[in-house]
Length: 335
Ligand code: AHG
Ligand code: MN
Ligand code: MN
Ligand code: MN
Image 1 (cartoon, rainbow, N blue to C red):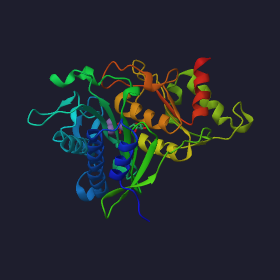
Image 2: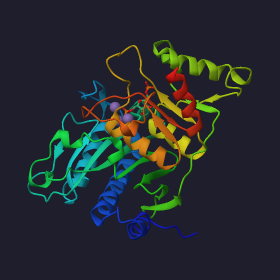
Image 3: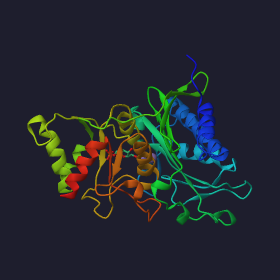
Image 4: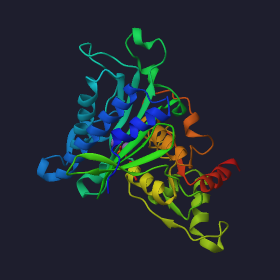
């Protein structure tokens, strides 16, 4: 069977929707190519000497895995010369990365979590790359891009996506007109369109949360999960199943395919932080994808895409997935 390639899909999207200009298409194709390189390195594992940790710690206070840094470098090198970006930001970089003066600058900002699910790298469980595209603010072209230029609400994203390095290598992408998925043909090196207008089932009986943290959650989160565990004789009247892969990309990909809710809530262990996940390059891109596929994404009380960021590495409490179940979780947070 002949599949449309990513380029073919993006050219058609460009014709259909004026929001995708050639520079954005170039950016997305370059990011997709960088994800192929990351997936190739991931696939080598021990044979490629990419497993294990470095001695370094990132701005999150996490020990960096070799693949965290390798993936970050692949994305930086792939995107510096293209002329489509004004700057980049990453989970693995303390400050923003400006485009060197030897290259032309463009109007887009690229933010990414180069390797999501790092704790799964050494145990051969699916991991991924998450990316978010914003436009540089008007007037930024004449000056150096600043960190403040990146601090835009998720609703301003012009594109978002993730690659998942699992049994298949896949790319899931939105440019604001629905969600498409591509499967990598490893022999051809081509991203083949294998899913279009992805829709998340509005109801679910499956939740994803790290249950070991239950005693640290806010009461409303504990009450919701207790009600799920009460099963069909409980207040929610159905038996729930649970999944937790500890790679956000994998848990979100499951929800994209069969529905469900994913939660990483506020936790009393770090009360000053809203949660573990990062707003700019995890929660915002995933929230755009989830909403574009008919799901919902909140921090407990508000839509994540409405949050006005105050800091590049800002944390946020995340509850996303099947629309009607998220509405139910929001009710627990309103009581
Ligand atoms: P990262 O590897 O990019 O730091 O992200 C890991 C995140 C997310 O992918 C996952 O859902 C969550 O951390 C898992 O957290 P726990 O290990 O606390 O379950
Ligand atoms: Mn990390
Ligand atoms: Mn991550
Ligand atoms: Mn990461």
